Length: 185
Image 1 (cartoon, helix red, strand yellow):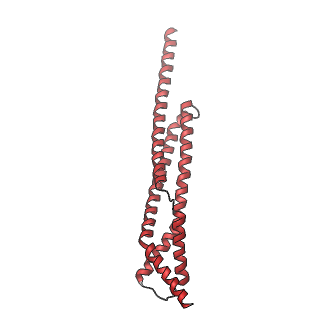
Image 2: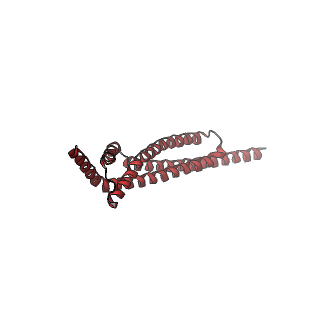
Image 3: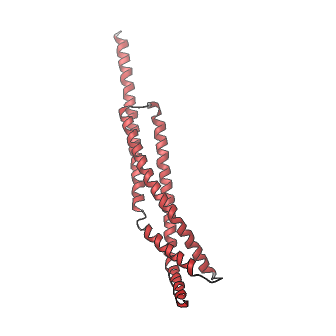
């Protein structure tokens, strides 16, 4: 009887030690996910669109002047291509801003989820057999956030390059159109 009790005690101790090892492994994986999420958040905040409202206002003013005062039936091909690229850039500001907001919200939500999962694992709450699946699911969400961040950074960079290469010329062009219109009146 003592042998059976000892064996059961040893088996129980071994089982609880294995559970603790898994708990440590799971919490370490959560820590890695939290670190990756912090890096994503840092990159996002470092690359935020602080001056977007001003850029959007400037670009829309140029577009409006061109739309209102360009009365020529034909313009040279280069200017036409510039105006077309500029219009596309203006349309991209809203999706870029929306992507920034979605990333910000997604990072907050994922941070909360990881904290709750950590609490559950540390307390041994919920379905312990599903912890592995939960961790894989959360890892995929962090990976998706990173992919969205890379897409946001690419679109933002492209739009800013378009702005920097075209705004000065088209702003001068639109102001010249306005000046000519005022001279005729």
